[in-house]
Length: 172
Image (cartoon, rainbow, N blue to C red; front, top):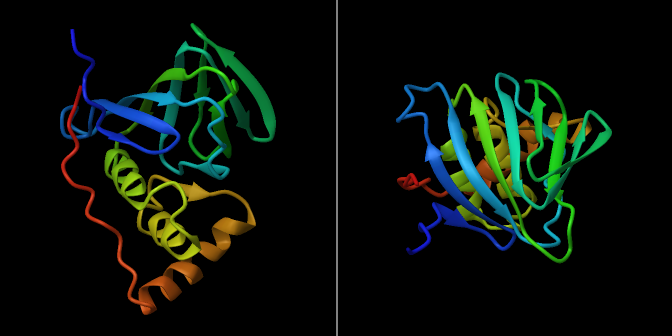
């Protein structure tokens, strides 16, 4: 049997949308993510109005939640309450890690990830700030960096920068 086509890919991940805001009346966004070996941490961030639940299916993910490290192996789970600074990456430099990841409520999570993937793994400061500002309902950089996002996003708009269209995500 052929493997399902990912919803999108980056240099560090492959993502399959399993359930979306549209298919769950906004209740949940669920995705399966493959973190490739050696994938880097994303910026420390938080979700102001959403809770996340992660179930590691294969490999190990290193989570840093509110400054505390948690190594979650296959079969393990971790919950991140709304408003909690966190980040995660594949702990192994040799094998992939797979995780099933739910975000509740869904809000614009699927759209955020689709636009982020279209920007690529290194979109530059202006585009990253524009993305974070546009999707601040679902993603906010934590700490002092988050305070600068509105100013940098305004500069990006003044320079004519626009975000790509998220396209139409497919589900598993």
